[in-house]
Length: 206
Image (cartoon, rainbow, N blue to C red; front, side):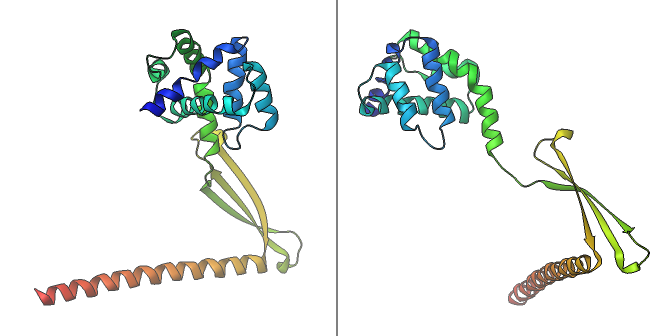
């Protein structure tokens, strides 16, 4: 608890900035570098804004601000509840300023978090057409059309992929798919057989 109070005690350093825009820059820089940390150039700019002589004076403030940003973005906190994050010892004018800025960026930053969550698209539909490019039957190709659906439910989340497969390539792919199907069927059969054997053994013991 005492450590938390000491951490909040560094927030008044923001009062040394020349303007609201300076504090806004600091918050945006911290969010922009949330994965990498501030580089030397960013640190120098922020130190100049706050008139701080060294990184050792700056670091506790940055830790406190990053903690505030994380709670604002990652926890289920509404815009109206942001001001409740501050303990009473934080200056009221600082509470108001940081609350306004966090409210301003909360939605944008949460959207950034969603974009960071990469997931594989799902196969929504697949069609296949055989095309004869020449008169020779050996020149037949299969034209595959895949419709992939991302996480978003809107039509903009759909992607269409189109490619061609020659006869030999298609046969190889089908053999691989049949092999996977047989492996999955064997696994299901083995699982069911094991379940039946276990059930029979339990019946015999009762």
